[in-house]
Length: 146
Image (tube, rainbow, N blue to C red; front, side, top):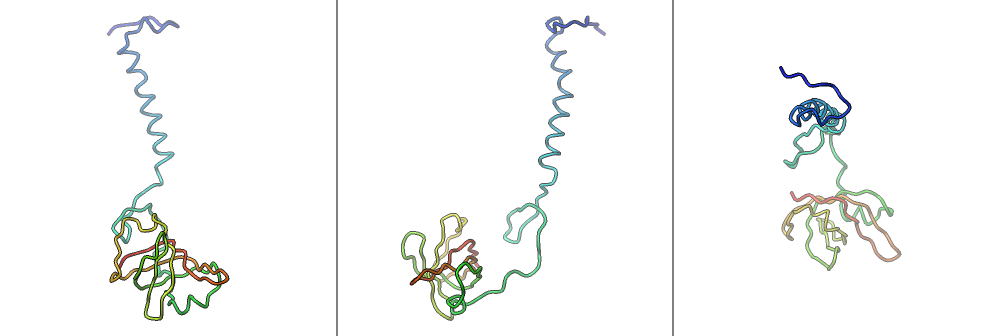
């Protein structure tokens, strides 16, 4: 075993010896950081096949409304509808149709989440009623292709 003198100047200690003495401390710090930041982020498989952070409600969701019912609701009311998107009016505006009628829906690009939806596809939309003086539409927060 080679003995090295203890001194304030670490230049007398070979580099390989200095690095080995820092390794346990560095590994300990990395482990502590991982446990602190990522210990509670367990992943669970979601209903759409993707992975989500664990935990949450697993019971029934909001009841579905019809276009006819939505037309009588107040501004900013949360709604859920099942039907088809039958026409693109330009920009973020589309026409949604169910068995009771049609209504305009505003869908931001980020809410499509890579889904391709055609006029024959059944979708569920979740959003809020947006009522102005003469116009009524749904500001969509989520769309799910069925």
